[in-house]
Image 1 (cartoon, rainbow, N blue to C red):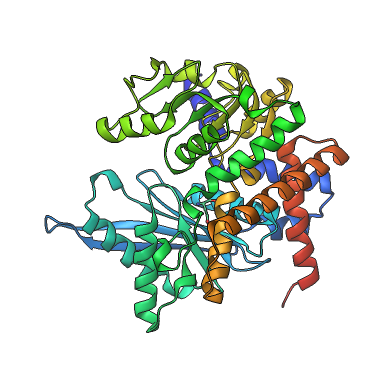
Image 2 (cartoon, helix red, strand yellow):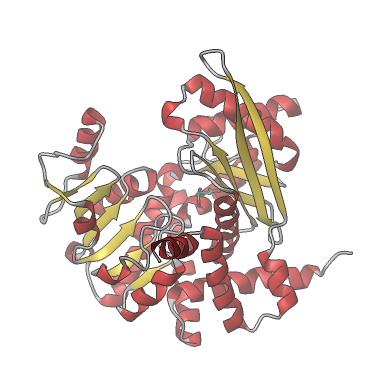
Length: 424
Ligand code: GLU
């Protein structure tokens, strides 16, 4: 019985199955025929590569890397690369498909892709990480490029990782090709505003949702799960915009302050102590308790499967703004709908990152760089338009926001495929 229940939960938490469930629901609503469903669902290309590396202690180790290009119907593949010990091909495949839908919702000219390397960055030196990154790049070099597939940072990868990829690719091509990756350092072809972009995008759509409820940011209590690039940036920007960040939840604890946490002070505390716990400007709180505090906005900004059929009924947030990819399982969707939680789904909420990646790619290809104001203004325009497009589908088809976002995306990709026709 227990084994069966845990098997069922394992299935619930398989991101590829979750992606499929959402896909099927939207395809059904759109009345897409079986053939188109097959084309839309099936990844265009999947690579598995071996990455042999000499570790610092002289041992030879072999890591495994993946790159999945889910769709190239609307443009080159696009999506991050994550480094984690538990990366699986199913996870990378799901994340690649989410990139396709995310780029389509934002209406930027990309398909979707994702990469992953099975490794534990916490026990690897900078030198080892650099060697893994360069060897992985060399292994996939024929399948990436500004017009082919453009990687970017994701969990446990950053600007430095992108600089190494750009350099490795450029060395092989005999010229500097900045547009092969996005999320690079600003003085190496990166875009201003890229680091903050995902968090900023979350804030922009959260503001749109609040408007629908007639709530001012000053009246909005926010709980954020994750204090990394997405959660940390969202916290900083939202605090600045007047929101009250009442709790931050991390993997090792949570901190709470009903009056609102001082985010810069908390970031400083974490930098000094390595953890958000025992912060003088708030009180420690049980992680579960913090996640389920009554609030206006709950912003999961870490990993997949945080909100599941086991806990979705406990959520007391008005708005769930999904900063992470896949934080909610498909089974939890219905429970959230029953409790009238307004969900801003991941493929809409966290699209700010890839949108500014798109700006970076455009700037690299033009060799002409924008100021931060221009980046932020154009980001806002795209996020607000995407929010409105999803809201319009939700209203006219009488479906929840997630189904509506998938419908917008599937419609756009299917349209491109029909126009192009099937080459044979
Ligand atoms: N990794 C980010 C995401 O999941 C950004 C991808 C990109 O910029 O290409 O959206």
